[in-house]
Length: 388
Image (cartoon, rainbow, N blue to C red; front, side, top):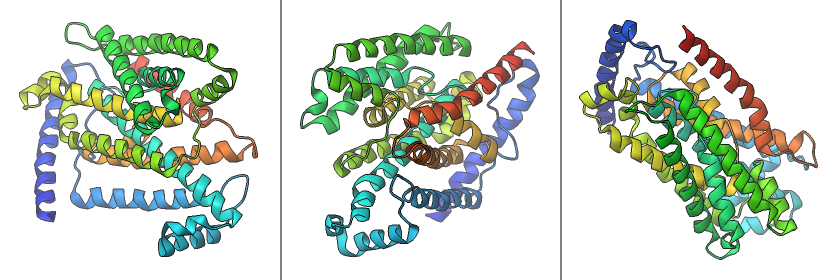
């Protein structure tokens, strides 16, 4: 198995080195891109891949364990370790313990922290795929309108009572998936022109579609029952509430399948970074890849929006930051971004529920305050690059 992985890595490194040389030769005749291949950092060995991901897995364990101690009720790491050991040793019967701290930890805090990690990992992975597909680090499911389309689909499901039926676990993500898929299809059709995809047109189309969908969501909220509309407004600001474990399991299935699909296309995304014509000449079915990425992005975004609401900028900020640290090879960039995205949202949620405890700040507010300035910085850099 290790020999097979080593041979695959070596073959992909050869392709990446050739692409890097090709990019250098064509650099004087083409427009500079923010996303490009660095010759040294594009080489990913098996040892480097395993070292980085194992380090991030260890860091994720530390962040998740630490987040379990934060909240209105302080729980020490010793109590967390003791409770988790009882669950491991005695099974789920330990969850019926009458201890207040054990109830808070197992029924409220643990599912919420796991939800935050999965949502952050999912949004970051989708951001990596969209940025590779569009060859620009400003791409993000929130900026492109996918999140608002998914939110509109989920809002319509709630309006017609789908969200409170016995099938809510599977139906809400389905409606959100349809909304996200419709959104990205509209944005793409508006922006594409003679086979090219101008980034400024894409961003403008995403912003306009966001505004339209937000207005429709506000209209749906205004005709709802006041009690339900208050919950809808809180959900739209991005709120991570502790789900039941069956809901968490269903979301894990969505995220696992979708992320695996994206990871399977890492080598194709590497080649696509050079441009569609170069990718076609190297044997990549570009149109098939576009459809697969767009559908998977809509599926994953719909799944997380249905349980967490609108959480912005995770899919834009995290991939860009991780790319600066580990390089542009998507075989490493995609899983690394997923782990860092999960840690980022776990930390953001811990801040959201402790800064003004016992009151909570919507986690979408925290991510927007952190990601908004970075987005403006990247946009100004992009403008400067286009002007030069």
